[in-house]
Image 1: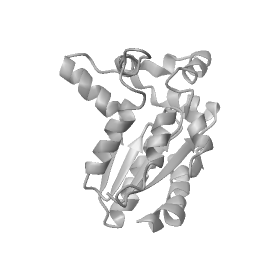
Image 2: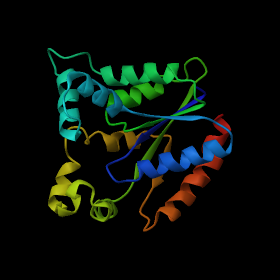
Image 3: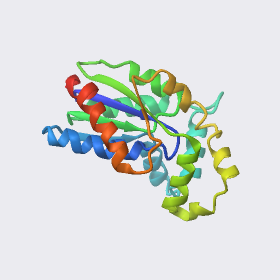
Image 4: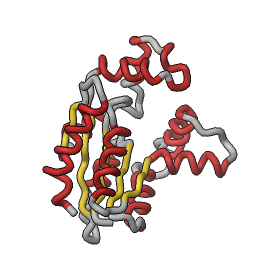
Length: 198
């Protein structure tokens, strides 16, 4: 692997759009890309235990694994992801879902063995993120009230995300009405800041 890209951003800011567009751009330059999520390890663990997947079980498992006093050391998920990234043979690894300070610390441990890293923070105001939630209506999300949505951004697994944004190498703001408008910013960022890293 030559480059690891870490993505952070509150829910519905547009991280998935960034990932898809970057994959397209790297592929157009004949580079291979692998996608990684911290939740991959949690889902695989739940599968091994015969437990149902889902956000609630993933959050519970992450909290159990890192419970003070009797859990694993802080950053256990970050270390597991780093090991996967270092073994991966793709040219570029995109890591979606940085949430904790230890995730940011792990990304800053690169370059290791010639692997470079960059952290991208995807930002969007609450109005746009709530509108996207209403528009996609996944799992009956359209019934979520504005007040409920505001509370979601203050859950334990979300509160450190803006702090990662403060130290990110690149910040993208996605307060656009259309995906196409945001994709123009992603492409510009790719040409000006990412392409030269490989």
